[in-house]
Image 1 (cartoon, one colour):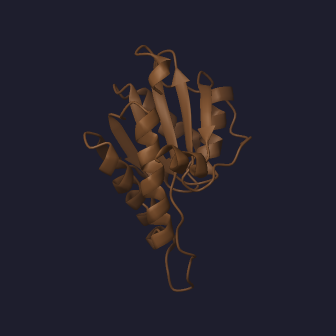
Image 2: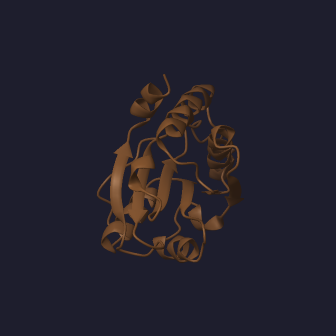
Length: 171
């Protein structure tokens, strides 16, 4: 967030937009954003643009709905590099993505992922445990700050913004 200064490492976490229900003949990874999900995510991304310093890197789960969400966000943050990572797939623990993030040189990183993984990651990065204490709605944004690089238990939750508020910020 712009007011947090240049010396902090910022981690933005976004849950994917509203997606279609899983059909019996469909793999979970193939689920797409609904038209309503796309529309709401576009507005939410515009709201993010108004309050966030642009991420240098966007990491996304390889699942269709998160890649689509990433593309929408990248549409407002044009210079952000996008990287797909299996470390953000559903069911992955927090340790792997935390190790990867701590090795990065970027000071502003945005993750696009799934629940409950994002909530567990927030808890892991702020308290050192993986017991989630919040739940992110689809399209919501969380911002964590670190005084240096990203490490377990050293993050501060700066805000958790609902998708509705993000959409209002876009107007």
